[in-house]
Image (cartoon, rainbow, N blue to C red):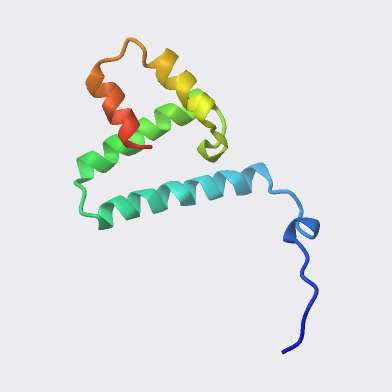
Amino acid sequence: MTLAVVRPLRDVRTPATEEELADFELDVLSEFVLARLSAGLADSTIRGDVSHLQLIRDWYDRPLWEMEPRDADRYFGTVLRNASSATRAARRRCW
């Protein structure tokens, strides 16, 4: 066995386009749905979880993988401050 020089791919790859990021985000959401489906969750539960994630995504206006704990705290502490406890629990379940 011989040694080889390893370089980070970031040096070679161009930054992702907006379209590529949108496609990737859709793929991740699709995998989320498939994972929940394979776990045996009901369609209505999955639909509700996806709806909650979309509401959070619309508020955040960036891909959710960029969200940090302080962003989630701000969302749950401001947007959901006056929401019912059931709504807050449903949104937390997605995390």
